[in-house]
Image (cartoon, rainbow, N blue to C red; front, top):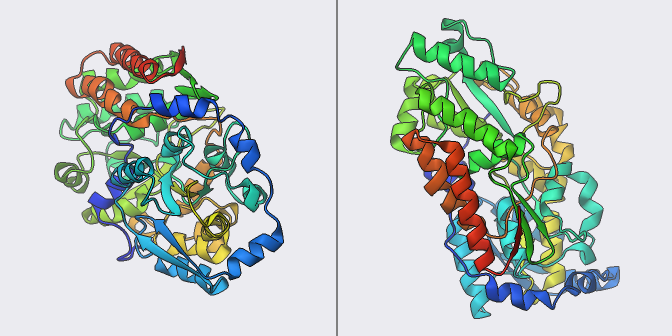
Length: 461
């Protein structure tokens, strides 16, 4: 797996991939305003004729695209070459959370919003609940469904079939592990979470300075990914104002008992990740595994250079080995802001950028994003890439296979910022303090329920 200067720095990468709090935003007014607009999606879904598309794409137009993707000018150049009349102005308004905050401000002000925007999967509901995104069905987006990994299309689709964005990259979760540490202590790659727990105890007993893994107490993204793998459905929305919140159901409590128990035993680490001390720990062999996502291999190869050749990749341990499953952590899309004055050109840009074979491959080879298109995930030149950092293992193939096991039904809440804040202050704190994680899940449930009700949602449990 190659690395180039186009890869963001560790701090940039962490900001892009974190599910961090984006700042509380009142949704009460938005819910009231949206409640009478239930027909907007179906009305917007009237197909745009090809003649209108051809005319728009030949009309001199400037589009503004907010994105934090480094060196994206090369991909945009492909679009502008195909459509010379359309020029795209790139603006980096921040990565993830800072961009979303600025976008909310512009939308509220009624001016300053871009035509297109980079948006992570988990943030989409936050903007669809306020009718801020354009349904891309009228512009032919539905025809692209078969090109993308099934679960990614589920992430960008609405309950009535709307297409809110076009997938760009993904983060199916797997496990990176130190082959040398495993060999030294006679540890086999865990196939189940029970085997993982036993290995954690065995390793730490043999060497108290080494832990099998670190479950960061500040990392709500990883927790959501593990919930996803376990088959949990913490958030299920229905319409504009109904939501079922189940962050302390049986699947969640299973996670709480498991990880909270290992933390109490002191056989795993719980330090914050993407910090100087965490990078040092990885380089010095304090942690024998990293529970991460498909973007992790490239990230690690640049952040733990002292350990080159010692790492390998494997699927996550399973709760039921007969039914392989994984979750997702990270990845983003391109969406069109509903207020754009150039909906046809903007919609065509979003589709081209992520579905054009040359553009999609460029993201994989220039920015080293993990692909969302089926074509790239079966492309021999991609999946056969043997990484020296991983002992010559075909790591891309490992994660391509993992991606096929990601459940397509997982949903996000329209107030992810609050969910992240509350998790950090309850579940995350319980891991750090080695207190009762299951009880903390109950507190998280209560806090989220109270918040959602105050925002005008009808909450079911």
